[in-house]
Image (cartoon, helix red, strand yellow):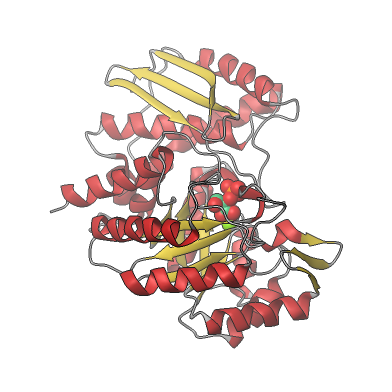
Length: 399
Ligand code: 2PG
Ligand code: MG
């Protein structure tokens, strides 16, 4: 593919924060990519931008982009993206780091163009390489129905301490699964008597974790859905203790693990993300050992899509599932390493959005291309629906 033009700019994400977007022009057309941003970030995530900020990153990227104009790239498969990352590496050594979000958009836009160059969809381009052309797996959605924690505003000083109360269908088709989640989401609104939503378009409430779980149980039962939680425990872990605000309570490590185990059993929870703080591998293991083998114990802040922590999490028996967020690591070839490791070790993969999202649907192609078991991309709101719709379109195209 022959590079005719590259434009890099600042755009707004779903939270109205600044993020970066890119447009690449080749003889095959124009391709765009934009980067999501997290709020409850893991401490081991790569920085999103240069240490001098987003604007510095954009300036660096524009200078880098100039060096690519009129160059020809032949990307036959995913591994060939190394041609680009090597160039980025050399440039960064001389002028400073771009940051994970810039790498995310550069790689993303090059992959979109490379797929088109080969007359493939992006998921096919990745799938050919990673799954040796196997028929793609259609994931199930993990949908955020009711929210708390850092993503939600307090109402009268209150919100649930857990970050996400999730619904997870188990259906034959993705489109039916999405419809069920939407119906359940509407019912949850009626029960909560609210119309206010949070960063990910989940309902906000003053209720406690347990009160929300009672509602979720009702809703899930009606539509035959499974229940999930993103505890995001690091966000309320302060100086060695889990500090609950709603109701005010302090739990130490042992209490936190006991509490989670009790809740998992009482509400038959299928999926639990980050139940303990991000460096507590033994706490994850403790919970995993004491609940049903079918319960997914999911690493997110614990693993940060970084093969080093994924190996540690799997090796120490702390997790049986993990979140994959490509901008946590800022390298699609590192994502590939993690994916291959997960497949070898039968670890379930959940490709996930960030709380601050853009109108890019590349996550859906990554999920199907890499063979993800689930996609966590919310239930409602245009930034979330665009990703779900992309999976539905791919599902349709396979029939
Ligand atoms: C999470 C994510 C997305 P953030 O914790 O799983 O829901 O949150 O993007 O804010 O890190
Ligand atoms: Mg999480």
